[in-house]
Amino acid sequence: ILFLLKTVNDNKCLRCFTPLFSKYYHILSTKLCTLWFYLILIRLFSFRINKTTKLFLTLEDFFWKEYVSQLHLPYGPTGSELMLLKVLAATANYDMPAHIEELECKTCVVVGNSFAIKHTSLGNVINKYDVVIRLNDAPVRGFEKDVGNKTTMRIFYPESATYNPGLHNEEDTLMVLVPFKTNDLRWLKEILYDEKRDRRGFWRPPPLLWLVDRSKVRVLDPFFMHQTRKQLLGNKVRSLQLSKNFHPTTGFLAVFVALNYCDVVHLAGFGYPPKRDQQHPIHYFDHNTMKAMMKSPHDISHEARVLKKLEDLGVLKYLHPHL
Ligand SMILES: *[C@@H]1O[C@H](CO)[C@@H](O)[C@H](O)[C@H]1NC(C)=O
Image (cartoon, rainbow, N blue to C red; front, side, top):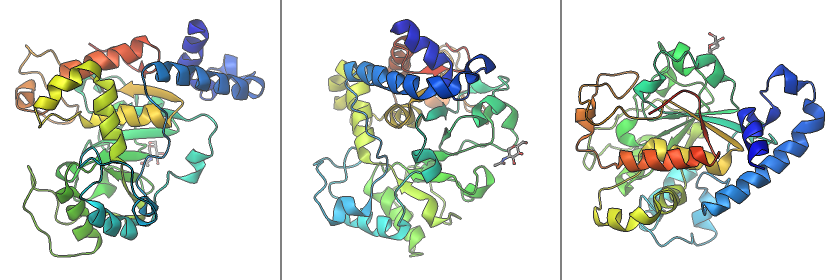
């Protein structure tokens, strides 16, 4: 089973495969993908992840029934329901694009912002996945050779939004807000309804104008933030809960989202430089160094260990060598 799993995983569920496999594609793909899917489910189950493929909050979640979670943001919608109702009424779209939903086997790549993706020339490879997930304000133009130029969805929060999403995304890119606090939803509401902007309550000023097509805006279900923290961080959670500012990184969250939604999950641009190398750049696009990470509310070494464990289990795969 392990061998089969590894083979199939290495060959991206037989769809973007090597010529060798594509010859037998029609016969094999359905059966193997289904089998592979169940195997992954079993493995995920042992990691206590229940696969959930509904990624985004819908108006219905709040209008017709009571949302089950009692948690506050970023782990649940409690206390932010009214703000969510207004935002979701304005976006009026809550799904992934139909051409992706219909795929029997979805291949996904999460493109992190790490310096590690520089000089990998992975651009063309990345563009071939069904779903390309990017994070925050990571640019694409000027870096296409290494990071590609396809973006199915971009996961962000107001402080990491850029004034003109059109610059580094496609027309169809879904802009997926991760709400960390009620203010994040207020920011979105003020933009969608063109109300007076209130700049208070952010750790960095978010854009006051945001040139977005509202039908492309989605709100990530806080369920994923909760599960990411709870399940992937495992036993360590208890001690982490003591520091209330701790949050998973957007990249780590995106991996969890992908594991829920996709049948194949590959990563590129993940990994931080060694802690001792304080001068090493951390991103492929700017000059921030490890020094800037010192005060961050993330536990990056623990996240790296969890990702390594998932890699060893064969649940995900890196597209380039990493630390
Ligand atoms: C991505 O790059 C390819 C090749 O350079 C080009 O044909 C395509 O239009 C680009 N797509 C986007 C969304 O920029």
